[in-house]
Picture 1: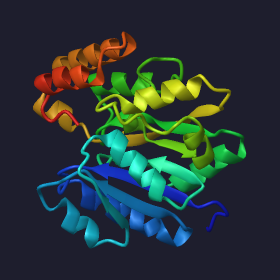
Picture 2: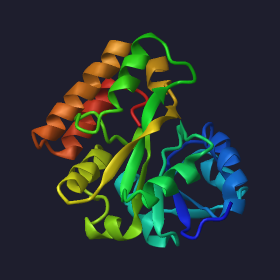
Picture 3: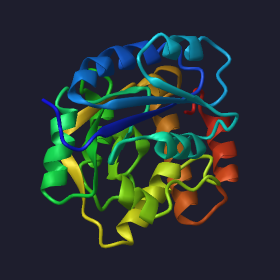
Picture 4: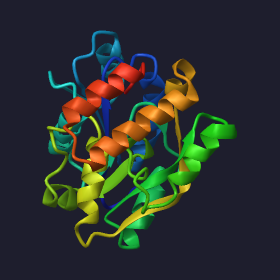
Length: 237
């Protein structure tokens, strides 16, 4: 089904040769429905760029490896009236195009999915997923949930803040909430890789997240937050 408003899917990457093929294999099947796929590389040293070049996508390259700058570049070059920011370690439902345009038709300017960590819901990871359904919680709004937003709205609020080398997604959502803009957490899940939990203990990840969220709310410099976060987790992104 072709939609009257084009959707631009924007994916920031940095050294993601392992995960990028899976996401692009999924997305290219929707090119016939009129979507545009944009991959923005932030200086990868592995085969990420050559992999992206093997797919029918728009590849953009920048020396700025922070996601905010990558996402802004993708938005600047996008042709779509609706922007869909998607992390490479996430897999949206096959209905994502229909979901987004249904919400747009219902008057929502922006929105995200609920989170599901890993392919299977189980134990402690399911607790994390549960809390992403509530719009009012501080933990809602992370980039792992993906984000659709009308181009005009994105430009109205100034896009992503390039100075946020981490927490850029929460900063943007916080600014969205300050405007009379309808946002929604869709009642479907997006599957996110649990790779942080594969190399870091569950409690260690939770502690790192709590410190980052708390520091963000207290107005601590994003550079300092990133330094703390990277020292606690590997991989951190």
